[in-house]
Amino acid sequence: MIDAGKKLKVIGRAGVGVDTIDIAEAKARGIKVFNAPGSNSRSVAEHAIGLMFALARMIPAADASMKAGKWEKKLFKGIELEWKTLGVLGYGNVGRVVAGLAAGLGMKVLIWSRTMPSSISCEWMADIQELFSRADFISVHLPRTAETEYLVRKDLLGAMKKTAFLVNTARGGIVHEKDLLDALNSGILAGAGLDVFEGEPAPMPALVGHPRVIATPHIAALTKEAQQRAGVMIAEQIIQWSSKI
Image (tube, rainbow, N blue to C red; front, side, top):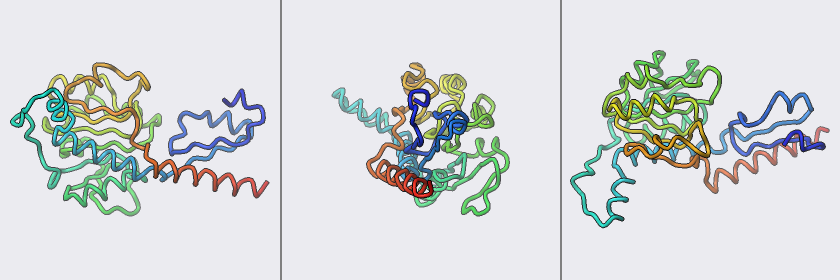
């Protein structure tokens, strides 16, 4: 797009992540790049919580069973989220909202981030492995960087309880998918809720099709409200920038 846009002056990313934009090349050509941090935080957070509920109560499997004409009530004894421990990786815009929603549900919230937040309403943990060993649910809310790529892999997955669940609504490539698949197959953890994948839009079939995985096609941020907020934020930044030219 940058090569084709000979008169391109601005790139607006209606969301947070700019990993799909060549920032260095845009800067070299004098092209401004704007994004909309915080615009989809609530949407992503609600989706993460929704995946936790779906995993805890086996909602997709129960729905599929009903649609197949079955009545398998005894197969779907779930768990409550109240009093469970949630480990949140990342305490940015989305992580904070997830922590607040989870606390409102009566969950105990543990936070791990690369640096200790200046203000935090939950328990912050310096040891990520201990967080994985204590949590009943892990929810990933980190950007994908050189430091976070494949952060969640065999060693951390192996520390999880066999009854625990992993949720990722952040970015593909933070969770090592082959290690996750191996962990699921060997019963190291109970299940996973995934909205993001390395091979989008063609993720690993064995992972997406796994009976203990609930998968959605990168839609956590896709709500009417989030898109409207993002559009307004980008437009306001462009107007402010253009007024100074």
